[in-house]
Length: 499
Image 1 (tube, rainbow, N blue to C red):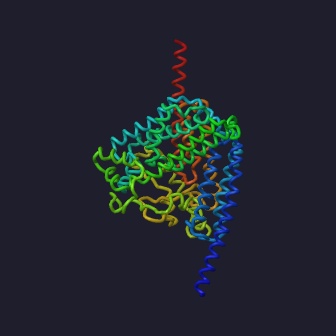
Image 2: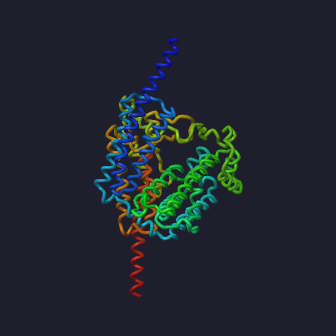
Image 3: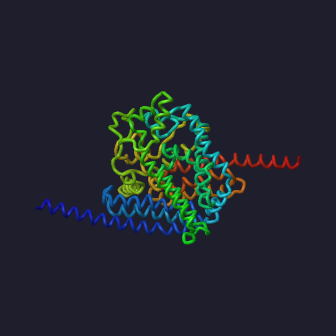
């Protein structure tokens, strides 16, 4: 009887604790909503989207985990829980104030206006160039050309590197193509019946299918799709002629069709996302026979592949992470890792790193052409896991933590990092927006790179400092080339006039 009473008492205590955590999370959710509206009024579309992503991937994801019993309730106490929520509320408000103070710089609506005037030829070239270069890499390197399939070759596959110039070209072509996707979305919303142009739509589909299904996107496939949907909605709201209460039936049908296509592709992706782990496909993909490799690639696009059998039948299965049975959208995310780091700081379990991650991030961001092919790369996740014993659950080939800028700077500088993290993200937005506002630099096709980088920044919730610095580096490398191209073009035009 006493045992049953204790069980009932513990159950009631858990329910009470969960209720308090849900209330605190909802308060945090509500406190992060005003910055979104303020950023939108400041005409910073990508800034507002970044704040929306914080609400989605911090408070909303954690709330779902609470309601689904996917996380431990009252794991570190209420002081830690409130402090962890405060970290993200402070981040949102400082980021928002930065956007308001620099509203003349961070306002990016002109980027979307310029996107409408982009010629279709640039979009087609962006999509086909990425496809062509990826085919070249597949012919030269086989399955190692695709980042997802490199994991099938174990540690050897993960340590594989292209030549420095191939890495650079692949990176920039992907940026052009992602920027072209956003430009295409803007044109679909702004230009009636634009989606009917098959000469653009087919190259878009030819790019997006392998790019998203093979997980080539830096932000992940589902986040890519979600971010495109959010951007589309924001653009729709920002267009004065397309306010929701003024939509004509034809416009409503067009937007509904676009939403249906996005939803359909999401379901399709879910049905093929783990195909490369099916033994039959994995054997073909890791084969030395090119014909079998292409067969494996083709099979990986076919939906409704049976469930993955025991991983012992998969090549290099000892190096492949075990398949998690719980739903993919219910997982510990950036908030849970923030809790872990806040608890470490409160309990003084480990010493702060005094800039170790920051230094490693700057070192990693140095281009290989300068540092050499043998430059050492220290991953943020590895440093955090080793220094603070924050290892992910289960078996992983590589350490994969839901790292975020607040966690990075908390680890490096303690609670002072709460103030540094939003300033770092603001710096990234500042650099991109200053470049994008230059009349010399913001022309086709270069503005697609600026849009692409802002696109990735806006989803930068589960994001480390290395990614932020690498994107800034890539943009700064392009700028002199763009200016040089402009000078040459200006000179040729003047010579033509003289002649």
